[in-house]
Amino acid sequence: MAHQKAPQTPRRWARWTRWAVLSVVLAGMTLLGYLHQELAVDKPAGVDALCPFGGLETLFSLVTTGAMLKKVAVASVILLVATVAMALLARRSFCGRVCPLGFLQELMGGLGHRVLRGRRTMPAALDRPARLLKYAVLAGFIGLAWATADLAIRPYDPWVAWQHLTSADLITDFAPGLAVLGVALAGSFVYDRFFCKYLCPMGAFLGLFSKASLFRVTRTTANCIDCRACDKACPMNVTVSAVQKVDSPECISCGECVTACPVKDTLAFAGPGSRRVSPVVAAAGLAAGFALIVGATTLSGHFDWTAPSFAQSVAETAPAPDGSFDVGLIKGSSVLAEVMDAAGIPPETVEQVFGVPVAEQDRPIKDIKSVYGFSPEDVRTFVEIYRQDPEAAAAFVPAGE
Image (cartoon, rainbow, N blue to C red; front, side):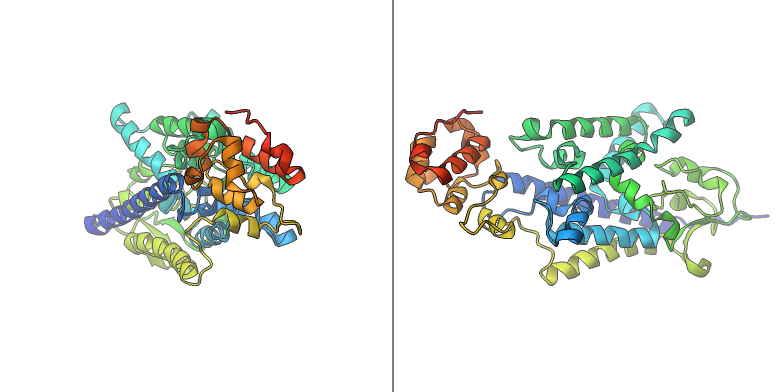
């Protein structure tokens, strides 16, 4: 039986579309992270507000109390809804077509292929049990978040560390996440999408929707020439050539297997009624659907791309009747003047205690703490003391960093 060669142009456009979307998301999110660290006012929302896993962590609190965890914004819940919608439509397609951390790993994998001259695969005896680790990570961090009402994963999250690469607090606050980021990128240099396969809790969560997904990669066995190009192309090492429908929860619907297949009408995305979707439509449609949800909620005012001021953060956390607030809201990125204004502390007292001139108090704490020898913890302690005894607070001596 003669086999028709698959046309090159659609396959090429499908790959370019996916990589273009991933490149834009990675560059855009990295820029937002940089601006969040560098700008004092009107800065973009932080990484915790722009990550779907934050929506998952806050879900219990949102359902039971109607309030979200600190640092989590409505935007993260919207992103969670968007990723679940993508999963119900096309499995872990968020991982393969939108996730910037996944794309970082692909870039490292591409470099590794060139240096190591080909793909490497983990020995099966290690690979199979190792893939279960991400489910343990998911259960552990969700359990901690719901039990402690806090973002438990934050210090260990490699994407959070990436977004804080220019932060003065990178080593002090995000060293574990930086280490995990190093492991993820180094591992991906040898084994494609190392973090996605073995450690990513979001990937584990989205994998739970695999069986309910409407569209999946299907293989027409009568056309297959058993070249295994699909297996070699799959970054998740799914054995596509051995099944008629790819049901593995490891599939990230990236479409690399479909675009690698050299025979026409052999591999395709297919949905209910075996309706096939071209790889170009799949690539553009999934990205457009995600963008549509984010765009619509942005226009409606529910998706906020800017970080709230300190006063807004205080207002959102329901301060006590006397106006006091949780000093845990005071971070290195908080503007000193905004903190003291919310606490009702005169700028002259701040200058007396911390030595910061009034003219410099409109800067983030992290930018001036080393110059004047105090830490965010000193500011928290000072505010607590001032609430009890303003005169005693005037004599407070910062411990320094």
